[in-house]
Image (cartoon, rainbow, N blue to C red):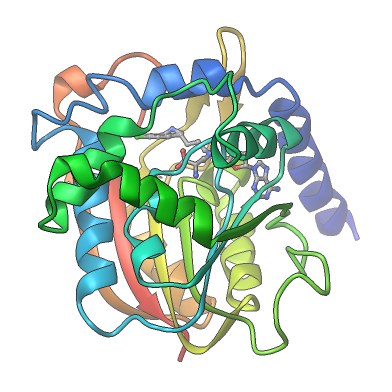
Length: 274
Ligand code: U87
């Protein structure tokens, strides 16, 4: 009983931290240079985009529906997947983030980040001309079917009738589970909840922070994070019922440590629900 209460308190405290999440500041901190410097191969964003490109084009990932868990205000994580899946569902806990995504999808004024260099970079990875980026933008706008609420701490993270009964064919989730979990058991449980969204044999692409204890989601918005190492990520994955295909680790060069968090590395993993 006491343990149950402590769990609930930790999760409730995280939700309170997220009330002040500032999408514009967040995008500025993490999605502009040096973290998103497309001229550098050792910048974080190009590394993430290369991992996702490879994972979606190896030939083993297919189906109809891709779900992105905890999209935040960002689109980079579905730029490769939107060429493989006919339907993409974006999700986030916060309305401010869902609104940011909807503004871009409807091609409205007031977007807090220009995704053009991202679209151009992924076109290059796909062997297309950077000028094909407008076609990729159109493709993304065509395939995104909706932007809906999600809560990874619920045993059913999405509303009951959002997904077909068989589940999604593939999940992608970037920097979400560790950034919303007060401790390792909560992270593992959240990972287990995501698996219920995925059909048997479906793939999970998970990106996350290593060694991080906090990040800023606005000038005075300090969000605590559960610090993870590779061994813990692998153990949580196994405990949640996933089978690991590949784990890659990126170590932050000193100049990528820009004071918006204390991340030391980033992991990318591809796993399968079987
Ligand atoms: C991204 N996916 O930027 N259930 O990749 C579900 C919830 C819940 C909940 C809150 C984390 C920030 C990571 C997007 C957004 C990810 N957001 C939502 C950040 C931390 C390392 C680092 C970061 C980003 C919440 C880029 C880089 C680095 C946010 C999302 C977490 N420091 N989702 N119960 N509660 N959320 O609204 O949108 O999770 Cl390079 Cl290194």
